[in-house]
Length: 600
Image 1: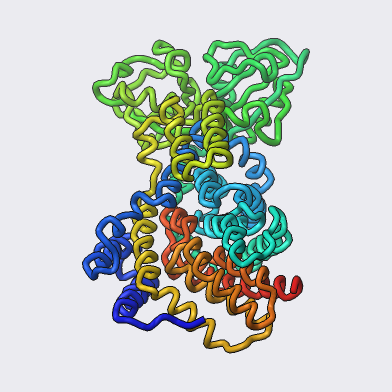
Image 2: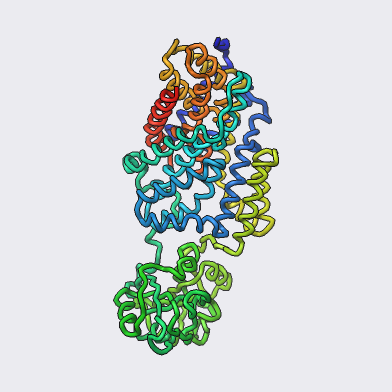
């Protein structure tokens, strides 16, 4: 293994690479700005051509990320992700430890059979909502889950691009190919180690409360400013318990506001019911009220108080509905009229909970209260009802109406488009980006998303970060700088024992993967690893496998696609990745080396 002659071109590329890493670590410039500067400098220096400099913007990796982000948004928009994640969220509750364990384990399993960035993009919206609902900083969740997605790529031979390519790279050496699940024991051990690492040390290595990705702080919930309103409860009215009541019988005398009703116990749902609508025995209904008021109503009428939402768990979830404040504008058609005369619940499908005039909120007798300009109405409804009401300008909403509107009726179309993309990836032989973009385009054409929603879903910081690093990898390979570095590093160790060789190969692969794509690092290093294993008496198949697995040891910098995707929403800096990723990188290498040594 003779190293190529060191040239001035190699030196200049290595200097650019070193400066890129320095800027990533110090963050004197934003990482995406650094990547754009690198994209421009390399052709000026003559290391890549003009088309190569911007090839990252049309690369399979970047276009695949855009496509999976759009498909992930479509699956979330149609409620598919909720159905998958909601059971996990209920199990996790507000426990940070359970959230990390359950979501990391799930995403690792999914990413073992699909592109890990696809799994990461799929889960991102749901993790954001979980962060808000459980009051856990998003930065405490995204990095562990993202790292688990990367580690999940080591569980099967189709979990990551380096492992997919491995058998093809072994063919010229007449080495036996690996089977689909040959790597599974090692991958599961690596996944388990990564999850355990964050469960034990997460609070020490993860950023604290700094969080750029939370949709809104918990304090934005207006209910907290209405102490007599309380919380949301679900009640059952047992059959034969008493006569039919009306919604108004709870609102005015007891300050218990009915926001949803199912007269037949769960089949038909009315959200919200009119004030004069009957609540028959055998019905299930959801109310807002303090616990004392709700328990008083239960004692008076024989209601059964449920511990959690059951019948209305999905309809009244934070993804579907919520409470907002709105101000009566001076030109509103509501001025001088009562809510009953407007038929507010019936016409607008919103349940008023309180009206605030000055500093005095009114909770009861709302139906007959004559509205004035400047009155503030607190109301509960589905987010889509608020969005439909906003353009009419009768109400000026006090909160931004930027909630994602979940449309479960489009779940079938979203799943069909995702399934089409998956089938194309597995059986068509078309480029990965074409298959995934077909699924994304299908979601737009079928109306799961409109084109503007698709554009808004793409994190362009991620796109330019990756697009700027791809030409750097091209320059490293064209000038021979990557081969020179790898050969020198491997030659410097002499004739190591098999265990030491596996550790060195893993470490070199980890370093090279920081500046060259994981595929490029694997293609570059597998032949060198096989030659070195043959010269030292180690198993060449295990040496090649070590390189392919270590290409997933990408935790030190936000250069991996998953890290780049989660960096913006999580509010992470490069130093956050170094702080959390350096110990895990070392642990990964130790576990990988031990596994290979045992197999040897």
